[in-house]
Image (cartoon, rainbow, N blue to C red; front, side, top):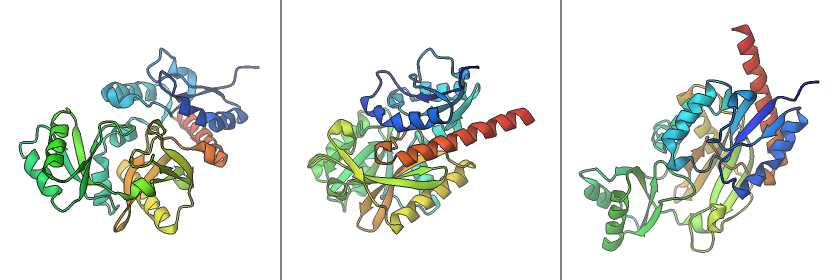
Length: 302
């Protein structure tokens, strides 16, 4: 009897402790007859030995984005990679939000800036004129790295300008949505195009960062009709742009004065919070196995 086919859950080194949340997915895949490994994406590993590679906890890619994108291309050439290079390339740069907004998906008022912009000071000053506080986020980044919350007075604006100029990459400038401090970020986990479960990530007192690394906590959340409608609208827009059905994702929402806005549509390596729903792990395992079977049929018929 041969060895079971392998599925790789691509991770990073050092292995993130919070990735232990992936265990329900490992169990669900093993129950379907697969061996599960979780090598770092940049490890010396034979990716072609796997029936599929699922990008999961590659949480250091943002500092080596070009290298990570090249890795995606190499892996997708030898096995089934989900998500594939086209989706990853589109999603790692948060300017995808502008494309979703053009298709009617509400996002916070956003100005796109870069340190080399000749009119940076004028554009930033004009954008924040009616705001109490502003927020800067790099267009390529993760874990709230290089973000800045600032007061929109003279000193705060000067610090914001200096912050953008001190970084090589581009930034998105938005009004700071204070509701994040009390309500947190609201996330709907989506499997194979359909919402599965939802959670609320609440930052430490007075903070805005909703990641565990910064002391945030998470808990189950019952998404209401408006949140679910926005999630489906964002997914439909992404599907139309990308031309393919997404296997998994996480729709992150914040609350503005006008209602929910899309904060991010995470399609590369989102934490899926299986600890709050083992059913979601089962659904992802089943959907992944179906994709593997479909890929085999295509390979056999071609």
